[in-house]
Length: 432
Image (cartoon, rainbow, N blue to C red; front, top):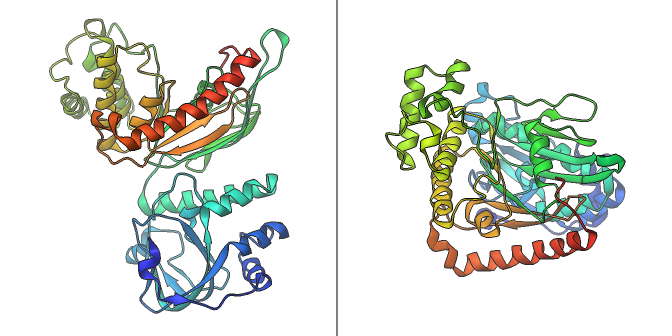
């Protein structure tokens, strides 16, 4: 926590004085007055001495700040100023900094904030502010999304981390047999670079529809999907599938007429990213990592289903996408094979730290694998609940009996069961 770095507290401003201070912020000056007043209520003043760190790189991002007076520098940016297009310091009253606290998923700081001279700020709890924005309709959502996009640009510039998926107010309406079916409605979620995010929910809730919209396989009726700040799916435009997103399907997609070697190296060689020799060397390295050494000369038909899933995940990594999308890839595997394959995925994730979106019906699987589990409502699909999985990595199967794991599992069961009852009562079929 940042309290270890605090020099002291300032006497409390009145709510009116805080609103005036917030109005100086270019992001907040056009916000509804009621939202500003509510934000002022949850803000408080803090005072720092020269040399104090307001937060350090790697700290948990729980608050964002509006400068009242003073000067704040970002040491990591200042050390390599020529590399970055973002501000190296904050010194104009009203400037906002600490954007990471405004993003779902409890992100960590990617840069530090150090006081270059005595500094006063308004500190605002990021989680509470997110909730406030969602209470103020479209204006609040737009403000939050603008702030989120700004942080995404900062994180990409500073940490060189790509793979940020931003789904905003997504809606998908199918019309089977002339009857409109709303699969998704006003569905929004942010998935940060390097995050392992799982989505669960009752059959027909729109999990696969959401994944297909990100992959660019299906159009949206409303809303928009961004990848690292660039749109990849929006109404009225052809979606943009691409090698920056790789999908691993439930039924498998290895070419049966090609050897494992040919399946693995085809993508990176065709994209001119790697030579055949380099691709094969990397493929062998990853195969060994998950216990599949020496199989590159075999055909997929000679492998078990679990082995094929591991090969597909390795193929996805070799193509170096920004995001890997997995649509129930382990469904149908027996319990032992499923566990082995889950552990292989965890090992590969720990090595690559790619952004992963994982669709599953298995709640234990979701909690075991993910950093965050999103529970979707019955159709029309929205994000009902977020379960933060604060379990240490690397993980192993001993977690399945840990009290904290069982608590998270019970929370997920309760949330999904409630939606499954609604879906059953409505007679939903698995259209999405």
